[in-house]
Image (tube, one colour):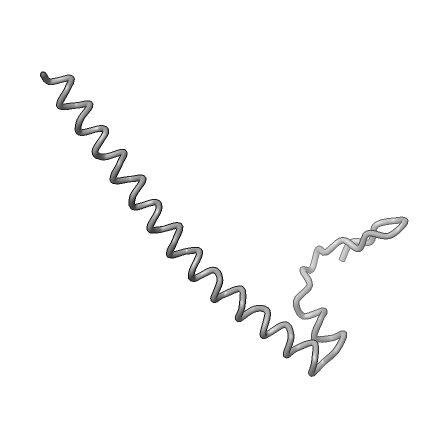
Length: 73
């Protein structure tokens, strides 16, 4: 009886965790889409206004250019 109650409690907690995780993923996905679109618009605006300098604003400091001999930075 005690084991059955523990299993039931564990099962309910696991189910609750799965449901909460699903909501968190959906919420992040929706927020992530908005953030991605905003970043894309900012990139577009910067490259239109500043051309190469606008492009470079969005490059990481440690970007690797793949050439015959890779260039870092």
